[in-house]
Image (cartoon, rainbow, N blue to C red):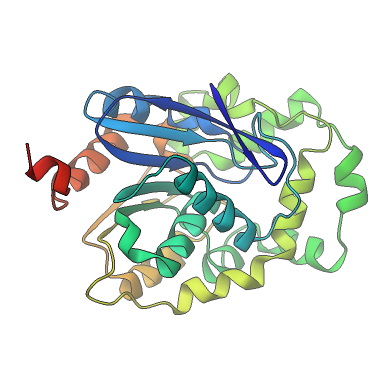
Length: 281
């Protein structure tokens, strides 16, 4: 575990391996350990980073929770480590952060793996839309700052994120998925995210140009947080080079079906143009 200080707050991350850099960014509510299987597989050929986003995992609460704040943090992290020609791999909020960064600075990236990308359309057409609308117009921030969730409720929340495959494996009991949900005040990051959802509409309207980095998308068809159908419509705009839909997975396919997700990432990476460092070897 290592630390990066951003705007006076600790951002915790793991770093492993050597080679072209890959940065993994988790979804809202989760933490960096959801990528353990992918990190273990890829660290032999790549330099792999897995972040705890500010407000989640072991990172400190940030000064701002907007999508733009997470993009700015990611830029500062890449600057701090002098990372260029990076592949970003994100889930949900992590995908939105990755895609937003790519829109601002496409030349800095080799590729994007967008798993269950969070956009205005994918969230407002998802099963959680009624709760989203309630929180938007009756903000829960004062309660979220004080509330600590009981373990039984955490298990239910995690189970709701899983598809049949994950529930059959009883992954709702996995410590990696339950971690930090019960920490007092951790719901504040989710509440602030909901307030910023309209800003995600720009991702639905973006059309990549010919110089934009290649994209791979992965969706869990049984996602009960975001709409996989809206995700399919998003693919029509993003035109990913590769697209994977996992029929029995939900919002956490990297844990539910780690072998298939890792294989998809590995195949996508193999098809990317080599970096100058590799060409010179």
